[in-house]
Amino acid sequence: MARYSEPADRYYGSGAQFAKLLLDRCGLGYVGVEESDRGDHYDPEARTVRLSPDNYRKHSLTAVTVAAHEVGHAIQHAEGYVPLRTRERLVRLAVAGQRLGALIMLAVPVIVAVTRHPVPGLVFVVAGLLSMGLAALVHLVTLPTELDASFRRALPLLVEGRYLHESDYPHARRILEAAALTYVAQSLMSLINIAAWFRMLRR
Image (cartoon, rainbow, N blue to C red; front, top):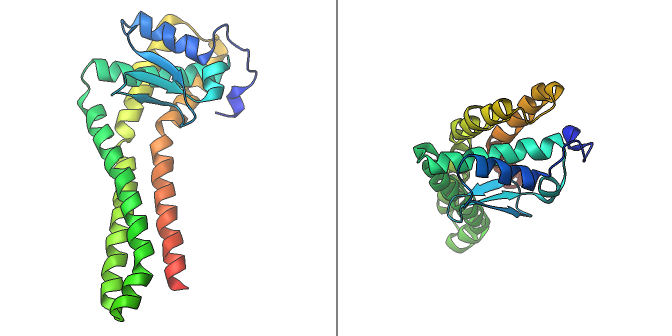
């Protein structure tokens, strides 16, 4: 994504303007487009496409392609795409699981000190790791929804509308793959967190 974020003026419209154009074309003019410091995502509760500052303001290939991906989620929502609703519930569960797992792991030394027995501490360690592992699994199973947004929604819009320079379509595919793999990256980060806790416990 960083590679294709330059030149920043490759296209006439910014990522935000392009998202609005696609939403209007798809009959989703009621969906908002906002700048966000929490990354690129579609918020189904607020019915809003949110883009990072660079993708909101820039006119780069990355900006317009990522905007198309997030519009893909808005289309899924409008069509009642069940896996999207399931994904939102699972992601909320994953976030809660990561927080719970971290709290449980932080409580282990206290539990061991209070009980003066390793078994309760071991139980808490297992519970914490399972909570964090669940978060990794949840992020991974959302991949089909992301691939659908990229390649069954966004890419056809880009191709049919001939919005991109012809030479940019292969690169746009790579950006859409990267957008779809965001949750895989988060899954791997969850596993790295688990590994970090293991290293701490071994000390």
